[in-house]
Image 1: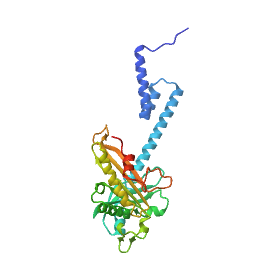
Image 2 (image 1 turned 180 degrees about the horizontal axis):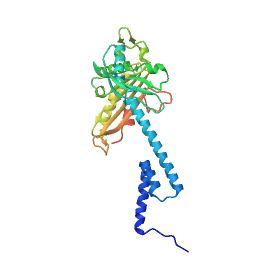
Image 3 (image 1 turned 30 degrees about the horizontal axis):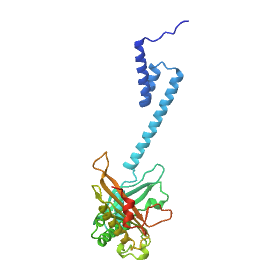
Image 4 (image 1 turned 45 degrees about the vertical axis):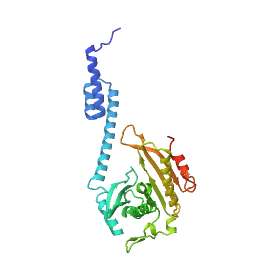
Amino acid sequence: MNEEPSLPPNELPEKKTKNVIVFLLLIIFPPVGITLLWSITKWSKISKIFATFLSILILLVAGVSITFSLVRLAYYEGGIQPFQNQDKLAQTYLKDKYGKEFSIGESTGSDQLGGPVTFNKTASLDEDPSVKFHVSKCLARCSSEYNKTYFTDTYINGLWSKQAGDQLKKNLPATDISKVATVSINGPTDNVFNEQTKEIKPFTSLSSVDRSKLSYSLSYVPVQRKTLTYEEKVDIATQVMKAVDYLKTQNLAYVDVFMKVLTEEEVNPRSQRLYQPAYFVRIATPRVNSSLPLNIDEVNVEMIVTNSFKKS
């Protein structure tokens, strides 16, 4: 039998290198890869057709992706972006509505493929930057023309949160919780704003009926950069309990107290500057199907220590 001629040994690496280069070019730069495929390789015709088809498919997918990205970039960052001038429009809306000057902060808007495109940013009151809230507006793919036309805001809830925090400090002046804790009020704001005079009923002046519709969230995150003794744990739990006792008298629809103590013993090994939560507890008004561990009507200092602190 006649043996088929074989390539000289020194040509084998060259042929392999050539095929690898063509294969890579078919993936990363299809036009050049297809040209070299048909001009310098000795692949079978069927293999060349199949490789050409896959390379063109890759080129089309890449082209569609790039085009989609450019359209999105032009839509959101260019002259037809829906966010254009929205900051100024939001400031005008807030000033017209409340008669005060506001600053627009960072975006918390969403842009989900196929879903609504929203302008959703934090805002603050110029005369008191600690009053923070959100202002939002649907810009595209809205559920109704109303959503696309009008802004909405949570300024009254933000103002009440600041006022409730001040009231907490006034009622718990000697505790660390009054210095560190943050307060958030959420709920309906009907019949508390006079559109003619621009006056808003203060949180401290709300009736029992108004308060009974509100949710009150208290977040207390002290930092103790050491291992806590039992006495220190009791001291922190006692401060939390004072806040709980105070909030139970406020006739609120829902109260949620969250405490998280940061300690040095929980330092993140990847970054010595980060402190991770070592102890935490959540105390809240009971709700149907609630999985919260501590009922605000039953909690005491010892329960807070037992449920939130690790054993030293």
